[in-house]
Length: 89
Image 1 (cartoon, helix red, strand yellow):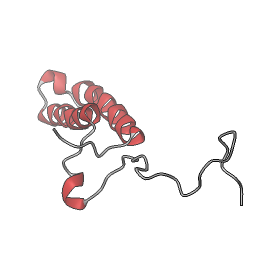
Image 2 (cartoon, rainbow, N blue to C red):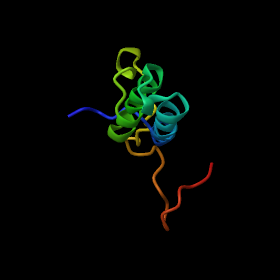
Image 3 (cartoon, helix red, strand yellow):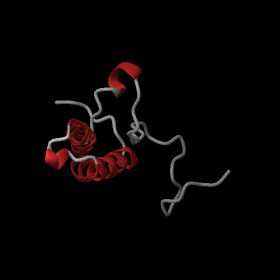
């Protein structure tokens, strides 16, 4: 299974970009009439849509990039006092 490397904002921006590029390619650039540039833009729009849906960008792997925020795995240094509140220092 692939490990996700895209955060929520990254995925949302890719979704918006992909959804916006499809009508641009098909209608504004003439892809629906067979124009190669329009078809190329519409086809390119599938890449951000797919990476957004999966949450994994293969281009991030060689660069070591991840926009996904990971939850801390270790316990906090301070132990909550009675009542569940962490004392302020």
